[in-house]
Length: 162
Image (tube, rainbow, N blue to C red; front, side):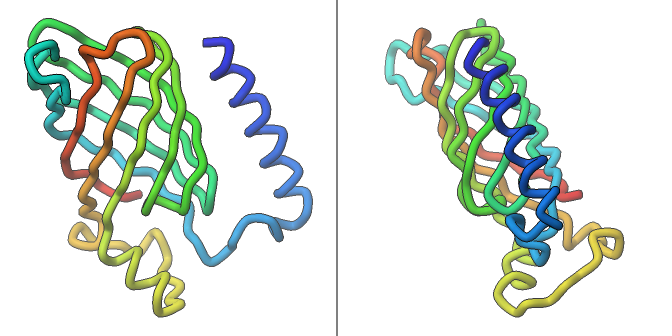
């Protein structure tokens, strides 16, 4: 938990410096996004894993900085985590976190066709004009727990982009 506190402190201080520079360090063409997602989680440990379950997740991404929280409910186990990380918007996120089951690392990918199209074409769509079909997002994540390897999992689900 101490690592998360230091990471959040460093992240907020570093982001404040970037914003004080009139936002030049943050790409203004990339709209910050929040994704609410839910789906299925399956442990990656054959025979020693805790089985299948579901997840609920909220993730924020801005250019190359991201953070999130999630809750996983397996058959016999539960885990709640908070993450901070780096990456390229929602396309690829490397996150570290801490939670109810100790330290965890996560590789996450959120796939939204509208966001990718806007980035490739340079289109500047207002986040307030997105319709439901523009908000649907496919989420994929792989997690590895440092102290509870039986909880290592892969998750797949759908979410809404805001």
